[in-house]
Image (cartoon, rainbow, N blue to C red; front, side, top):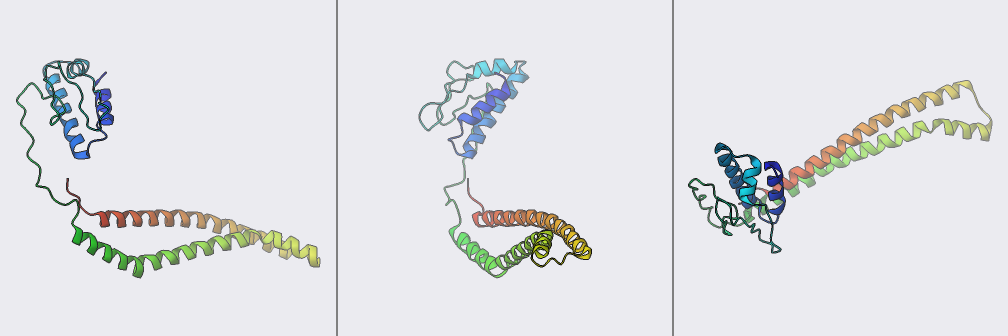
Length: 207
């Protein structure tokens, strides 16, 4: 197993942990590889010394590193320490709420007014325009069928009507392309705006 395979497996096995803990543990493993390579060891040798990651059935990840030259890894460290002196990570910030509740409420109210007064009317108008273009494209493309129906009912077929129906069909095909591009852009705009709303409402969380 090389470094990439080892780190991929570590990343999968550490998935139950919070993201900031998982990133810290992966960074320690990267440090072990760096130090081992400086000592002239291959990736396979370093992996063999660290030990293959083997998650326990419990939710907490406790791989077995006993026998590794880097020493066993207690739960609080969970990964081997490099052979050099390892400085403990700086203590995290004191416990803080996951989100600033007053800010969350205030931003939510502002977004509500913004959406009701501006975003929803604008997107509603754009959607109505898109539907209108689609209807116009469909109607003009069906002009030959209307000509056939008129001829069968009234028998008033002329070359001028045929040319007009073909011209309307061409316009309908152009409108169909416009409707496709318009709808695609509108969908992307709505999705981007919804994502911006979510990120703005979510705001900063403390890790």
